[in-house]
Image (tube, rainbow, N blue to C red):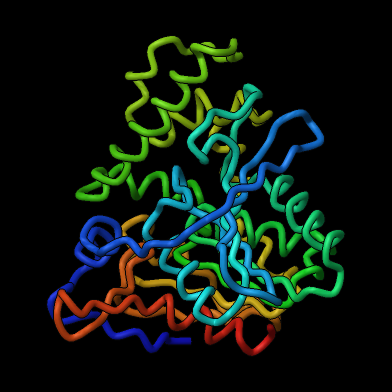
Length: 317
């Protein structure tokens, strides 16, 4: 169904929406306390909890190379706090400011750490309502997990935003036109993380010169795939893309997407027949990638996601 988002007149176009939300907004000030969650394989992930709120818990999953410092993560955490709920940003391995311990890292289809995190929270507080919100890569991880595991019944509801439903298509789209700017910035961060880890531990990688990795396909072929047990980038994309798992989702789930998302083409958007009865898809003509900026003036910008997401979750928490 069509979404009801209306872009600001002064922030038109997919790139304006995408870049304003990342670079121009004043990042909300949130106080966190950090918990380190030790994982069964000897690694760890860090959880950043809001310092206020009670009752229901909303787990926030960031996007590629994001963290609790990301403006969208802080924005939704602020909105969660305003509802009186508890928010927690689950960092993927190596994204909390400290390299993880193992050679492997995280990727778009890795649901194991999310499952462990949710199960841990459920064991601690069996009666507390839980929900989850995933952005971009985090949304892909969330949807794959929801569609594949019966453990997803631990959640009351979920929301996924700007998801790259078809990973191979997203990798190809980001290698064309202005979208290469996003690829360049993200690849620089990914290469830096690998280089930093190489100083500490031996990585089972054949490639030596990381600067030769100029696209996501290159990086996933020579780094993501060998580190995480995939035969190739295409094998990784095929197994990890969330679109094929949407039919298996059994809890109330809202998908928010913009047709002009510069991280992928419209072909990535799933059709109604691909969704389970528990899933609502809202597609807006505009909004960019995790943008959705509205408001009458730049100094009075509104961030629609921070209104729509709590409104949806509020029906179930």
